[in-house]
Length: 255
Length: 159
Image 1 (tube, rainbow over the protein chains, first blue to last red):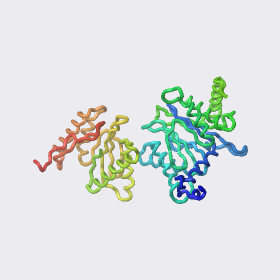
Image 2: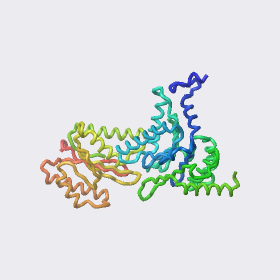
Image 3: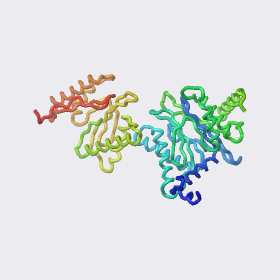
Image 4: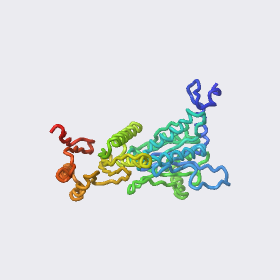
């Protein structure tokens, strides 16, 4: 029955669903996992680096993590070609705001702008939706560090910790159990980093043995300059985190 | 708060446009406000875009108080869209008389009362020395409590 109502984005099914949007969301479940965690002093976004062929040239900067502006970064899961369009739109939006007001665009406004752009493809024009989900991590002076997730429907929500891409349900359930379970307030960056690696170990088919299977990104605030510090961990730094996680799980008796 | 000078047509049109856009921003963004600096840059940007199309002949002083950082800001802007943050400012012929008073008397950390006294000094100077001085001045202040009128002066028609 659903088949009759699923070829056009602009048609609801009798059950009140937009099948094309749902199929777009399904497409992302084949993509490399991204985990985002909000910490008290920053944001961690960790991604699975999928290398489909040893002949592939290594990415010059990243295939998953993209800087939108000085104070917002995004992590992508899904069709890279679709993502490139939306990343450009996000960068333009942030740039135009800065040009107009000479101050950084509040993070939620940026996310909402990108999401409104995506929503148009679920309602007008007969074009298919974007097959991308994003994690947006950013800082602004009103709300501090924030983490948002958005999907092809154009919907977005703020999170303390979340997961997109392959096996995201497993990732999310691990986060639910382990994120800040004993503490008040938010974890610090170091704890968040280890948790992110733990989640990726679970969602990836084989637990990563080396730092180059992961891409670990952190955002901090330099209090002296008021600027955000973006950092993708080097292979050595990443390996240290992996070793720390492996040691913790060994001592805790986890499998 | 903007103090503006220029032909009334442009003055009213421009100020209405700015006021409406600032309000629209707040409505669109869940009540989030623009800082004084952001508003000043928006005003300057509007003047700049119009400059090579159909300029607004408005000179202004924009003053505001940001409750979040507890800081006041004053910006001098002219009809050519030049803008600069200033500690004190004057537009029009009055600048010939008042800037020297401000240069002498302004210092860091003035209280509101001291500031008003300096403004009154300037008004006195204008009424003594300026050939076409107006009899009536409105004094307004903007602080953490918002914008309010300190003195409305007398309506010359009532005298």
